[in-house]
Length: 414
Image 1 (cartoon, helix red, strand yellow):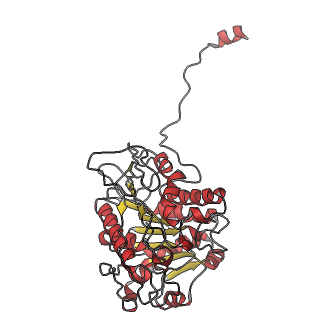
Image 2: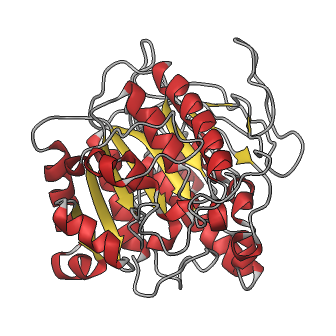
Image 3: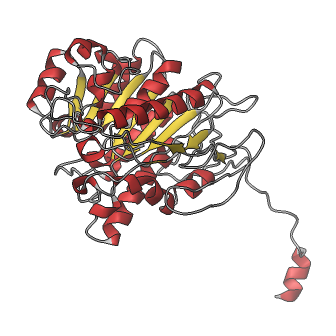
C-alpha cells in the first residue's frame, strides 16, 4: 500500500499475502492466498481465477496444495505444512508530481509475473478483494509542513485492519506499495496479532524522522517514529492518527543497507541504541555476518515472527533505477537475495512489505522491467525460490526397465 506519497499523499497500490497459522517451524512449506485492490472480498468458498479488469484491480486464484520445496512456511495450514498468502493492492488519488507513479507499483509487479512466480513455487493464491481509501476533504497541513495527515492516517488504519484480519485468520501477509508509509498500517496490523514480532527494515533510508524533525513533510520518511515506543513522547498526535499506538521497541528493529540518513535520524539510531548495518557495515562484515548478527539481535533469546519491510531503493540504482529516491552504493543482487534466503530459512517470516517501485521514473521500459523483476525475485525468494533452482517435490529417481532386446537379438541386429 502506498501511504503518503510525496508530501504524504494518500496511500496507493499495495499487496498482502495470507496463510493459516498454527505452529512455526523452520524450513517448512507454505500455501499462499492473495489479496488485490478495489473489489469486494470473495465470500467463503468462492474463488476467482485469472485476471479481471486492469490497473490495480486484478483477481487471481491458484488452487492446489503447496507441493514444491519452493514454498516457505511460516505458519501451518490445517493438516498441511505451510502458510498461504494474500495479495492486496490499494489505490488512491495520485500523489504530487514528484512522486507520481508509485501507486502503479502493484500493477507493475503483477505484470512482471509475481503471481505466476509464486504459483510456480507451489503457493495457493486467493483473491481477498481490494482495499478502498477515501481522500479526506480539506486535509490541511499539520504544523504547516506535514501533508495529508488525515488521509494517510485513515488509509493506514484500513490497511492495518486488513493485515490484522489476515494474520488473525492464520495467514502471512505481503503488502506491495506504494511508498514506505504503508508500514504504518502493515506493521501495526501485524503487531496486533503478533505483539512480539521483530522487524527487518531493508532500505537506503532510515524513515524514522518525527513530524518535528522532518524537512520534507513526507510521511513516507517517518513511519518508524510513530511505531517506536521510545519515541512516543517525541511524536505529536497528528489528526487522523489517534488509532495508531506504538507497537515496537528499539530492540525489535534491525536496519540493513542504510546510506542516506538525516541528522535527526542518526541521533535517534545512536541514542536509542537501534541496531543498524549501513552499506559500509555490509562491505566491512560481509552479508553473511550481517544476517547472523541480525538474527542474533532479533531471535537470540527466543523465536518470534519476522516482518520484512523491503524498500527497492536498498539495491544499487544500477539494478533498481525505477524508484523515487535512489542512492548510489546499494546492495548487489546477490546480497539482496541472500537476505531474503536467510530470512526464509528461519521459517519465521510472517509478513513482507515491498515498496517504492515507480514505473514512471524508469528512463526506459527496460529499466522499469529490471526494477519490477528484482522486486519479484525478492518476494519469491522470501517464499522459497533458491538460486539452486526452485523445484517441485522429487521423491525418487526412475530405474531402467528390462531391455527391449536380448543380447543375442542385439548381436543379430549388429
